[in-house]
Each structure stands twice: as C-alpha cells, then as structure tokens.
Image (cartoon, rainbow, N blue to C red; front, side, top):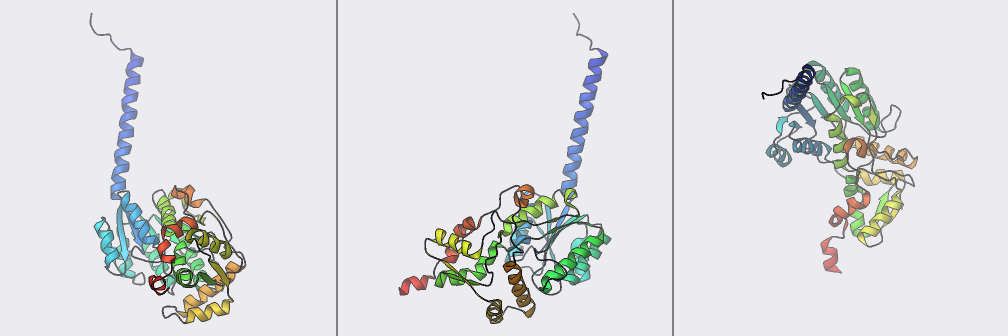
Length: 338
C-alpha cells in the first residue's frame, strides 16, 4: 500500500509548526545579531574607589558583550580590560569632543564620577552628546544623600545631575547606594590594624554597606535589560544595617581579637581629614556633612535590589572582612617587635 495521505488539518498543523519554529529561530538570530552589535560605554572603567566601573566592564565582558571602556589614561587597569576584549576610549568627561568620540555608536552607558567638583559639567556633556548620538539608556551612579538642600556639595550636585539626565529624554536609571564596603580600607584598616579601634563620627546611626561588585551586578542587570527600569531610582544596599559599634563587633569575631568603635565629634573628623594631603576642601565638606546625615539615620535602609536585579544576594560585612582579612591585621613589623 502507498503512504497515507495527510489530512488537510494535519498539513495545516505541520505548516503552522514550521512557521512558528522558523519565526522563533529568526527572532533568536535577530536578538543575537542585535546583541553582537550593541555597545556599552563604561565610564570610570579604570577607576579605583569601589571600582564599580571596572567591575561593570568585567561583568559585561564575561557575558561576551561589546564594551567600550572610557578611561582617563592607558594604565595597567585599562590594559587588563583591553586584554579581556574591551575597546578603549581615552578622554576627559569635561571635554565635549572626547565624550562625542566615546559615545559614538553606543546604545547603553554606565555613568559614574569621582567625589570631586565638576560633576555637573561632566553630566551636561554626557547628556547633550547622548541625545545627539542616539544613546538609549544610562545607569547613573548617584548617592543616598542626593537632595537639593543637603549640606554636602557633592550631594547637591548629584541631585542636580539626576535632573539633567531626567530632562535629556534618554532612558535613565539612578542608583543611590550607601557607604561602600571598600571604604573600610581607608577609614578602618589603618587603626584596626595598629590599635584595634575605629575612629569615626557616625554616632549610633546604621547603614548597610555594599560592595562595588554587588553594585556592578545591579548596573549590569539594568544595562542588559534597561526598559523596565527607565525613570526609576534604586537604593542598592548590603544585607543588614548595622551601627559602627555592631560593625566593630563583626571585626572582633572575624579577626578573633577585640575591636572597638570610638565615636568622635564631626569637627575632630574635619581636623583629621584636613591633615591628609589628597583631601580637597570639597571632599572634606562632603564627608563631614555625610557624617551628620548618618547620625540622623538617613542611611538606615535595607533593600533587596541586589538580589532582585543583580541576581545574587549581597555580600555581608563579615564575608568582606574575611575575604580581606590581611588588610585589617596588625602590620608585620608589629609582630616582629613584640
């Protein structure tokens, strides 16, 4: 007997199945092509504080995405990114033509700026160029204290920078993290190692410090799927808000030796900061007013942003200290002289 002739409804089902499969394959190919052609500009990719830009660049590169790293100079960190596959754009955010070159052909960008004066000019350059080049989305690194009436000049400038990006018409998402865990390298490590004490003016206010890696995870989650986050402001935090006394307790447990938090007046804090050569008046003002905000409870917030958007629970202060234990240990010569 000959082969059975398929009924018309069976043929219709097969044709529909083939059509749907073909459509899905076409969409998959289109998505892959778009992914291969999409460029991400990462400002601060060669930065050091919290290294959020560097972490964002590395995480995007690990996904096989096209990253253009905007750096001030070609140094070891920039060369490392280049070796991982990043394209380098060398320039200054205050130079309009440098920003034009950096944003040419870019669809999505991560914007961050150091704690220094000049944020508004950098933001304006970026926003204006972005509107001209067709930039689709920006993840903007702001700060938890951003508001127009804050005593800190950096907090006020960050609030204004947010508004500039909002007015640009580009899809923007603002991140307002609290203190970075990496801050502990500067404000805690020197005296924890030598005296087993932390001298800070934070009172009994709480904060949930977050690592640069975790902030980067949030930024990458938004950059790779920006539309749901346009127009939103997020506060990514660590898993628990602790007082500095409680943080000293964590140091004590991890280091297996007593560590004490010593609360000092803000004016004493100013005096200490003024003796550090790299501290500008702008930064001293910022750190002094932020200390008052901390005392007043403005940092006391815990969110699930890191896990929800970044896909991984945030690192705890205990895990961070454990991972960097040698940084907080007494200097070697202290052991030798004992």
